[in-house]
Image (cartoon, rainbow, N blue to C red):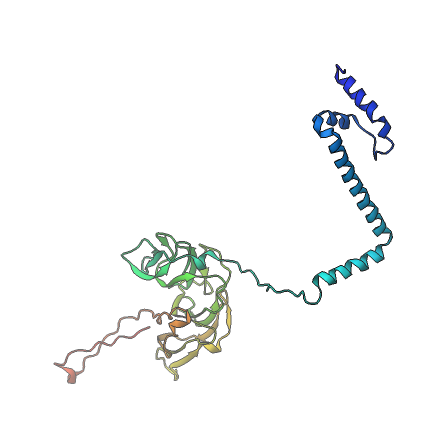
Amino acid sequence: MCETWEQIIDTIATGLKPYLKILRRPVTVEDMAGLTELKIKRISRFDSNKAEEKIAAIEAELARINDDLVNLKTYAINYFKELLKKFGKGRERRTQITSFETIIASKVIANNQKLYVNRQEGFVGYGMKRDEFICDCSDIDDIIAFTGDAKFMVSRIDEKKYMGKDIRHIATFEKNEESKIYNLIYQDGLKGAIMVKRFNISGITRDKVYELTKGTEGSKVLYFAISGPDNGPRVNVVLKPRPKLKNLNLEVKFNEILIKNRSAIGIVLTKFPIAKIRALDAAPNSSSGLPVPVKPVTSPSPATKEVANPEDKGKPKSQIKLDF
């Protein structure tokens, strides 16, 4: 009987000596310590026979693999023959592979808010219920606002947010919406040229103010509309009368103007002051999914003095209002 750990290890080592020649590696002390943890029934004759069967199966598998390595060409041919049997004629694919689309949360979330705007003060949000209603929206939508000084900004909708005074257009915004084209006529500075441009808006940074003009102080929007790429509006630009200026009417066909990015300054329409801008086309069909264009924006005119006509004495006075 073994009384110490060393005696137990020596006894196991003595019992293993007859089998050391058939073992594939030397027996370590850790191996013998592992044997002491087995229960007596695990090392019975039944378990011994079961272990011998497993060893024989492993040795047979090793012999087969070694034979395949020696005859690798034959093994490869047989392997492909088996593939033809499993996946050849009569075993064509019956399922269909389809692409997996990325689900955008803003497209599937319900419109649980309403967008309002105070154009004069420049505030927008879903908490301004006393102000002008714009559209239904969700609380994770982005919104875009264009102001009268020809600037715009995109921001995440909030209960109340400042987007710049004199808001000319406000709507929800979707990135990379190539079908939405912005049509703009603006004056470059207080006395600068009248410019015209078409552009789309792709990548933006939230809460950053973007210039749509050259950045000249006093620039202002004269006309702003939204359309598709092929249904740009037509407008009539009426110039202020000037000596030697014969043609006072200019027709602008936005379809003939190239669509560029937002930073393009546009082309010169005229260097003369304008009196008013009139839309020649009806608003694009709202069923196309695009907002109806904003009506032409005009600048205030200087005060005009009426000249009394003696023949009109006693008749009600008519007021002439010039839109600029």
